Length: 554
Image 1: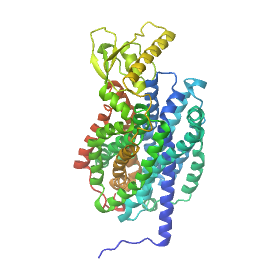
Image 2: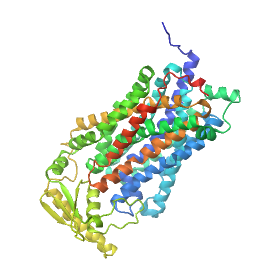
Image 3: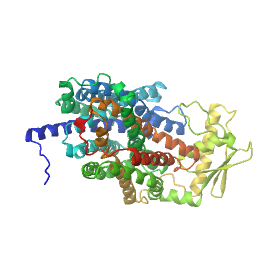
Image 4: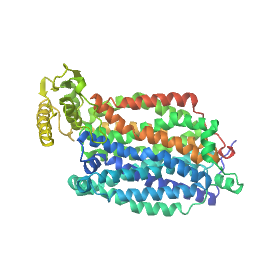
């Protein structure tokens, strides 16, 4: 009869401290990171008021993606520190940098105050955040796993995986409380700063807890034997067996986790429900918070289960289900969140009839393109209203028209108009288009009385539940893949490329694809394609790792 060794009391206390320090710091860092994404609609108005509404929204999500953009650089820097000098010191630095950057965001002047300096400063702070986050998660996961009993690595890491969700829930909670307390007008004007500024207290507590830590036993063993890597970059990225592991991790579970997590946790709320379904922002926060609270324990459950069933096939199952369910879930969510809008779109579909040569891609992240053709003005206005539309070719040189059911709304040409005249022309067209949409049954806002809230929460539970099945076992699986000498460096880069680049840019890519095509569902093909590829890679190339002796790895 086999037995599982039970840690002595002193070892148990030490493990509890390690779990608390790792998880609390991760809660704080993910709180910092997600506050920006949850306030995307407000940040667009505060910092990108100098461009059109569609470009401002895309630019806001690109600014969100600026953090993930530099995460690989942070991974290299802090990975080098972690593999050469110790895990503890690396993630003490990361949490300090992250906290200062987040606090500073709450003090930034908006576009109305300092013009283009406002988005420039915001982007700079997002880059600093991303740089720090590049070394945080891998460091915490490695530190925790290297302390955990071999048979319980998944379960111990389950607390860390719950920390990311707790950070999201904490950011949702403080935004919701602040929003409700002061009202939407005051919150949009200046109250959005409170969630950023209040993070300072969390920073102080998290740093104090982490300062109580000792080095991980596996890394300490390398230090004592003078066997730490002298060149972790070289070993990680020029030795084929290590490079191969990194590539497999990147094109399998890491890229999948990136697109699935960001889409099912952030895009669904801040873009799909709030902007495209016109659900009140406060209500969106409430619904998402309920779903996050109920799914948070699942991160631990699937991590624990992976100690018994293995990591690989749990993660593979989550990726496959996400691939096939992504678009159907969003379609059903639309019907539940705004049934009047879904009915109007089904009975009175909108069609843009225009010369294709006059239509630009509705993607202007730098705000330099002037959307002056009748096609551009029509599509930009519809995108701003969150209305899906079809595209139909018109004769060469013909002015665009927007058909709403059986009614046709003539477009306006902006070429040759000065700025004042162009603004007036767009406003006049928008007024006529809104009247036609209203007559066809398109609502300005989702009626709270008609929202099927249990169904919305149920769909969010499924979406986030799939994230937990993938994310729960992932930390242990990643640590078990890489050798101890170069684990921090070799693991951090593919993690931040997959979750940072592939996932972090997902909201901007999905939104831009949907705006360009006209269908609010078209952009989700990005998620389906990426997840489908990663499912195959996970199945055929990712090894099972849960029984590995990570202390014996060279």
